[in-house]
Image (cartoon, rainbow, N blue to C red; front, side):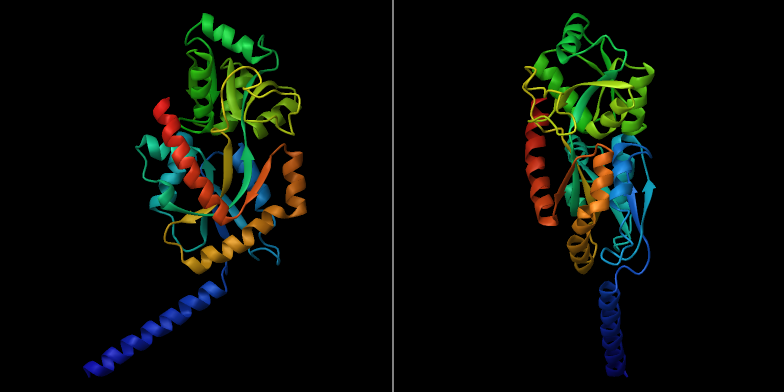
Length: 322
């Protein structure tokens, strides 16, 4: 009897393994959810909806991807949920923002780190920019720094949260210009931070180039500087911070992509890693991203793993210095 039970158990285990392998082989069998840890209308949400719009095509995943927003605390709400509660079955993916979640994990108080997630592919690299309202008296970064020097802590400006790319850019600006600024994180993310600038709630803001590009096109803001090593093709007339005399590198550039929770079966990770970059390369997707002023920077899973590891080292050194 014991031998029969043991044999039956082994048979059931083998069957389960076969079924599991078959389920991975036919993945995906139903729509996939992509969690965005920022609000609707912001740059991450806007871009995520574009880069996933061809997911249901036969030459992509063959199933649609639905966006769910879990915003709050500069992304912490969504990424805490993703690290601790999301199912690791391939049907719940998350959008990542670097340096955001790595910087937050270094500062502490969150339930995630780079080891909590498995990257799939990167779709974009969005530099931070300094913006003011269209009717602002500031017309250059020297105007901003001159005011900040004369009014320590009196220059209010918005960003998408604490220890996100916007905040890191702000800290770098304070150090490089030798001024004290009043950074005001906005719980509504980049979209809320931009609204605060346009409405005059704050005197300026650090935001994503893609958000700022659309706002400038609408005539509601002026973009005074780019936190990157080179001028951006979307803003060829806007100088970098370095060009304006401030020693600020590209540490705050916002890399965006797709990841899954740690523990997701490797065959699913491999399938996604082989398929998702092609979705980003789709000509229709690229046209929509260009029209929205959203810089693309497509990277494979292996390239993203290298980028995450490099940013971990850079951010540990940078945040220790700031």
